[in-house]
Length: 269
Image (tube, rainbow, N blue to C red; front, side, top):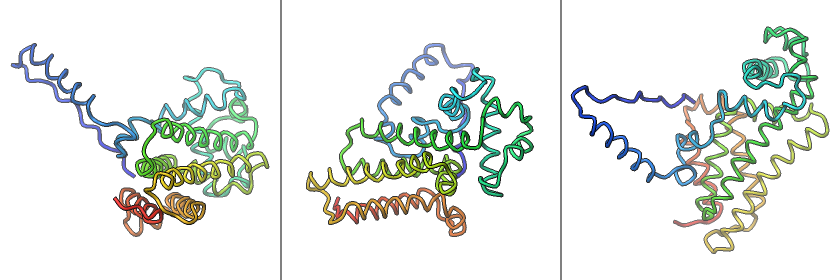
């Protein structure tokens, strides 16, 4: 999905007085402070303001997750190489498979010597563990924040679906790797990946049950509905080519997911 264009801030004309140059920004700030933010505003722009999951903030998250196992302790020195290492890992995993990929392949693809590479990662297991760990922590952080907002069940259903779609669209390679390469991971990593999906399933079920308890949802089997929702969410990163071929954008698919889920809960606005 294309990034949202950032429009440049327009300067005031030279003939404008100093007073007006002061009061107008203050008025704009006051107006913006009254506008809803994520998750009351569930637009992708509001989400991206609240959660920056690209660029330097993402690689800082990777660094913090993995820093105890790295010889490089200076974040500013590590970020550029971490970006190379993980982006090239995703490329190689997609082209030849993670299990067939070697660290020598990764060294050649990144342009980082084997000795330099070992300063960041000790093994392929380290790579897989960081990818799973960063994704798990990101999902936990975003979903825990939603729980802390104490949204009503309908708003929570919408926010969970929007948040997961925004995350899996932005971190497509991370989601795809954890799903596709799960069979080749260590037992501990496989368990962690399974636990990630189970926790998300449980969050959905708890939200559905809260709505049922409040008398606004009606559903005979919340577990089956949660399984269906998870499977539909996964389609966005597993079958992206299909959505592109059919010219279905993220907003259209999110609307379908929300509508389908609320229908499954027999919700009437």
